View (cartoon, rainbow, N blue to C red):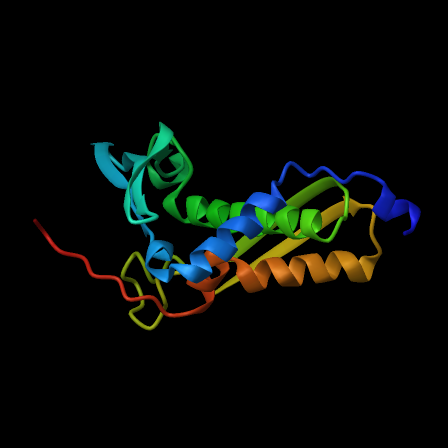
Length: 187
């Protein structure tokens, strides 16, 4: 056992609990079906507030410890009041949060001590699409770039492997990179 493995690694992840959950859910896959939810209410102009407080998982309704609220808006450049990040920026934050959490979990499982992890994301968008100027232009991102700056007790190859494994297990990365059925209706 080398000095690195003798050192107690603490990235704030309870790997034993995660591995225990994986083992338990592998024996009862119906409990692994989760349904995530968010509600959103219009405030004024382009300002809206999303609330996230409950979800379905482990075969029953679950509540977050507290309701989480996210304000969204548009910048003054778009004649808005800038009460929050734009919805597309919130989507980028979701990708960053999912990949970063995955890196911490994988590092803990591989006994790698993290000192810092910073993700910087950029996504290009041609507004001619959403403004209806050119129907050939896509409304969404034309690409997303994620750059990680990671300081850890690990080689560059080990850090690259952490990032690769996080991508492999990230729900939000999967949502970004695979088509997802979305239905929109009026109640």
